[in-house]
Image (cartoon, rainbow, N blue to C red):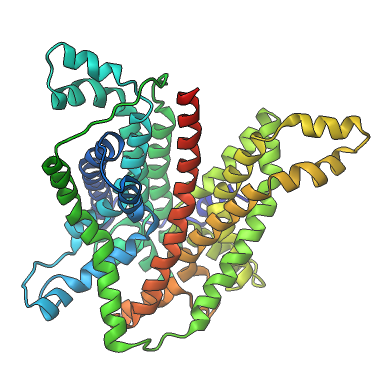
Length: 490
């Protein structure tokens, strides 16, 4: 099932589809330009914040870490929606504050939004690597007369370069696969043009464009797989105690990022809610989102259990696990294009909830597999062996010992799949049953209709759900930090 989209797209693409015409080359240029600008922006924002959160001792450090990582949990189209209708002539900033601002759209607007919502990839991967470095490196450089900032530049950053590159490549993958931001900002990238071709019944051309996009995604994934950071043996952790004015200056530098990425969407959606109320929003849209996402979470976990157990058992299982990750690398718009064709060939599946759930499962099953596997790997194998010695069959040992002890990982994996499916936009637009509106698709409909004030309720609900996703994401780091601190103490 994970390999199904590729085979479908190859069979769907015809010789008549254009590949190297002027329009396609322009789309390719826009897509690559957006990817490059996103990489640059995410690195310029993420690396300084990684140094700040890893090494600087400041009040409420945990709070600032959560706040700076929060954009990672938000779908970027939330930010694009808020910025597009806030800036420029007639925007909300001009209407409310009377301040004229330039428009944010096109390539530079898309790159700004992407950078604001992908820099946490760079910040978190770099920060994890920084926390593993030994402070003696800095101390030795300082003893030799090197200033603090020069030693950070010449000693620390080169040792975490691979982590920076890994985070930057994750940001690049996000930029390649995102549909909502370039569509709202009016930038013709592969994802937007594929959706236009689909709506124009040009499935063959959409499939060809999808294959071209997958080639770029595959190249990025290959580069990412070749990057492996040097393993450090953690020593004494470095802590910097800057002057109060320096700490305040650092916090002040981070404020514009937080204002644009978090405060602005919340303020704009709240303003619209006060001004227009719930508008035409029906809470059945939230129920539709929750229902489809819940079904996808349950199916994903059920399928993830044997894959995770096989991955622990041997090489063949690990290969199966890697294949399931293929769906996570396929952009939602590409998955939607492939499964639309599947639905046309199997009319009983076309525009059904089952096909939509299938798309969610194929896209997000790696989240469930990873969560279940990480929990199962930490189990004490002696428990299962003891059960077998006492006469339990393999099935009984699995049902009574392994399965209950991996329940926590199953719940966490299901929650992650649920949250990602709730926010999925392109696949839901293409595969949802007729009249089946979700929070994400309702926001898209009001954008198309120009009734942007009606996006308040779904926007705020998606922000709230993203907050739960952030808590799940950071809870793992908190457990990891507790383990490290215990090791250091011993």
